[in-house]
Image 1 (spheres, rainbow, N blue to C red):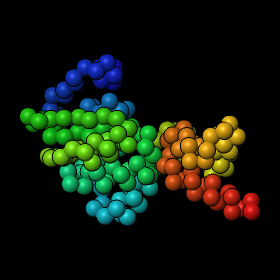
Image 2: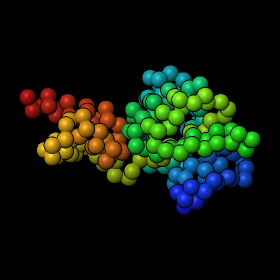
Image 3: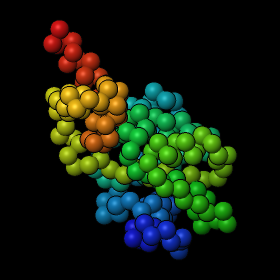
Length: 184
């Protein structure tokens, strides 16, 4: 399935017992282990807290979402999981207008913000890298300093470290700010 998707083949799945399994198959993300999380909370604060608890989840995560909240949920997902985490929006599965959009969470967020989203939505988000849970604040700060030492500005260094470790930029930024407070 992943090879066909990577080759640009238009892939369809024969309807199965649930939208969850169909979305996991269509997403092109790892299918060996996944978790269904239901609908994320409606409010941004509660949704961020839920996503924060799942930040280091290594299994592929599946959510249902209302079309009018998809953009907000993806924005919150970007801020917690990082812009480069992979995902898929699966829409109207088994129906005439079935559609799957794959990309980074940042790309999916942009898509949701620029398209009229209708129908039943299943959102699939890749799990964390096995090493991301082991990343410490010291690791992040050291890597930011390496990038800065190579001539990169701080904003770009933080973005680079976030992408490298598969974590949100705000977490790297917070680690750098805390380290600077400690050293002054």
